[in-house]
Image (cartoon, rainbow over all chains, first blue to last red; front, side):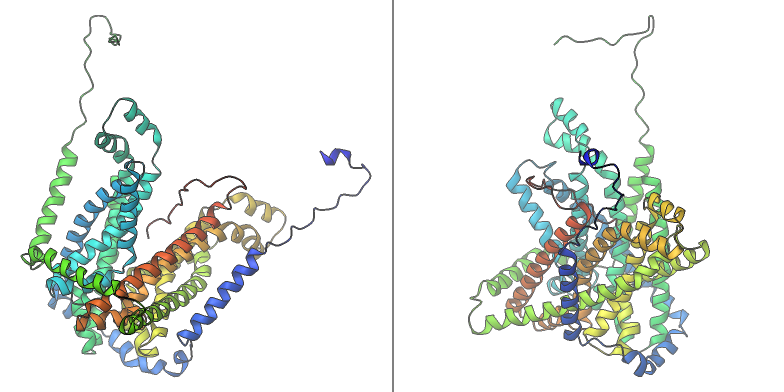
Length: 269
Length: 300
């Protein structure tokens, strides 16, 4: 206690400001350096925003005059997109649940096996969905089957990681109780871990479904079916009126599904 | 062990409580199955090809592995590796600039979308704008807005990614701001701080670690997004990937995918450890850090 030994008459001086850590300036310098490097590399400039804004004019004009009828003319592509998203998220999430249990040390005591599964998941997740799209289009041909397979891989990557992290963080109480009463590994996972991980898992599954609608647009560009293929065709024909209508409809659908899944999440959890 | 009989009320026999009804679960399962079956019919997929897929994919994997296993120092292969790496770095640049644009734009918007900062009218409007941005895939931003003005190239990709990141980052920032500790805010107000001073000294220091972690997380996502935009011709690794698939150059595809996987894993690891350090702080000296539970940002 140094305060009690200090002479009582001394005026109170505020404590010295701590010296700023060296980390902050070094970190900021690194950020600036990377930014300059990246900016030069991609030739960053905002001048086209002033000089070439006119080039966007026909596009904007097209967008302001959407061809509403076109939405319904391609209605089978819409159905296909939604069907792809449903199949891919159900199958992908089911596989992801199994993988998540295998990849968490809480439920898989065989360490080398668990570590391998974790590594497999990281590799699956590191490839962008479009790479899977290209691979499966090459393997099973142009069409929605390629899109479904690509999205399944993508979903496994997203959902398995999030679910495995939820499993890592479950309350150990029920697990100990299951162990104490002599439960097998499978029963322990089923009755002590799954009920705890389920709310998180369902919420991630719905999230993945929302992602799938957006991702299927991208996959359509590489020939994997759905509304993305239509967007690609209309883009190459420069028919911005049709594109505008599709984008607005997509927007409405994503919005509606967002609201629906939020409602479902609240009901389930 | 002796069996313990539960104490009973005299004259009444013990009955376990009835099992809860499973009707709702059954109905839910039936509905999901029905929707799935409907989707399988409507998807118009060429299902029989699924049977051939494993064999074909196996063949691809063999060809790709051969490409990866070729001596990376010899004449054609070394060029594949360096070219892929160059383009992957360009993708990283696109993602970095895009994330930076998103971070700069979303930070003020996050405050405008937080109920404890902005008036309710502003909050509603800004939130709807953020939701709208989140609903549109970045590929649409790129083709609809950026390509006509900025032309085909990495800059258009970076701007599309930047604008698209604003939706998610703005939402996460506003949620972080809304969940701050009110103590510092009250004490700043009590000592006569202006609105700006409250934000600067009571709010920003509290949310900054979380917000920077979100920026890094978004950077990881944007790396993948920049690969997607490359397929449109917006530069980076995606452009070479689609070109290689067109000519079915499997050995080069293998090399390119290997570069994507390795670089992404390295960046994810670096970004993950920085995020962990920001959120949890340094481990106490002399204590070996246990495998930590890094909370992922909530799904958005």
